[in-house]
Image (cartoon, rainbow, N blue to C red; front, side, top):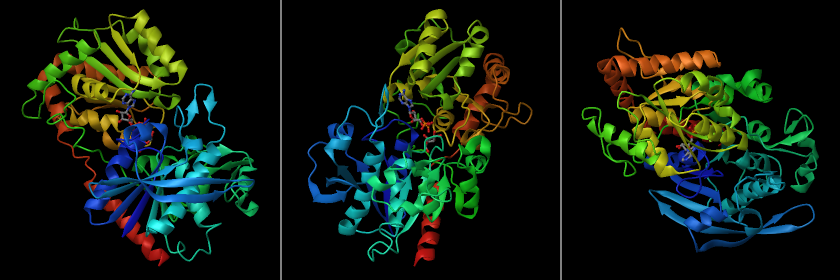
Length: 485
Ligand code: ADP
Ligand code: GLC
């Protein structure tokens, strides 16, 4: 089969979160199963800097809008581990300072940027190869199924192609004014509550859900959660109506990049059998965070995150006074909403002997935090999958997580009698439960080194590679292709 991936982020070209990790890894695994795979990505300024001077494979595609046309060039990003990369170049829309937003808010023409992206991918495949399956990701690629089943409905080249949508985060949907329908030259009759309308806005993700053959999300638990009003962000009823075609497939992780035996970003390598290197990584991390004074018995708690409300860091604010007066040291790396950046900055000032904070995006430092911390904190309000807790398990860094979405599916509570489990979970998303879970972890770290080592090894022994999830996606592609043939 030929599978076309369309997404707004992909490592090593451009990344703001886990979507980029997934698009950097899953296509390779699908290709390794013997399929032809192409990935389409907007040629943002950030991508051009990483991959400059790429040759056009299609010099010009006309993308019509209501009052004007835009012209797109498709660039050859090369073949990497069996995956053909294609960039969608339209400098007026993608050659910008940021991907989606500036500090003052979202780009006002995001409707156009990602409407154009979807239509350009469809047009490009007509010249470069229409796939059996379009595998589209999040709202930024959701116009592909919408165009495919409306404007392009009678196109003989495209009509047998199937479409699978993966929702990485139902909190981001792409809401635009109703007139967007006309601007994108879509028919008004799709602007109804059972199609793309949501409270008088044009909801791109909803369009993707309605018009795709199958919908997946990135853990089993989140697949259940998003069909409830609490987690569905207004899309729960449309997701329930697609229940038979909604699947939870847990993300894998790329152990060629995230593995303490081989990671070139960390101070020393280590394995479940030979853990000594982890202590060296801890020293190196503390040095990098200007905290070399921290004693070996003090548990180091790590955070690496986008700073967004989703991630639950208001709980850190609520427990700070109690937690940071205890014998712990917290290292935090993150960037995002000014409110949370300010929160971490002020904690750093207030409790400088117990916490060190880096505001920014730094991949190498993220690896150091995974390797050098003892405990990793993820109090997310909701978490579709979450990759950092899975990286933590591999690095012998014990996760403390809110039992939601993929966090619940990937972390197993430590059982001191049976010596089973991989981390600590709290079920009620409140300050006391979070602090109690941190205490269970920190107490075990201080009081019982043998049990702690077993706990670390339990996590390090888990296999969250892409092999099994890739097989599940391939089976889904086959099923969708069969339905459409
Ligand atoms: P999300 O996609 O919701 O942000 P995930 O846990 O799925 O959450 O993925 C986050 C990814 O982004 C991980 O690879 C993590 O290491 C990385 N990341 C997040 N914030 C930073 C940062 N400030 N610096 C470096 N990497 C970061
Ligand atoms: C989203 C989610 C995160 C998930 C990632 C990759 O950004 O917030 O939980 O791991 O996508 O699927």
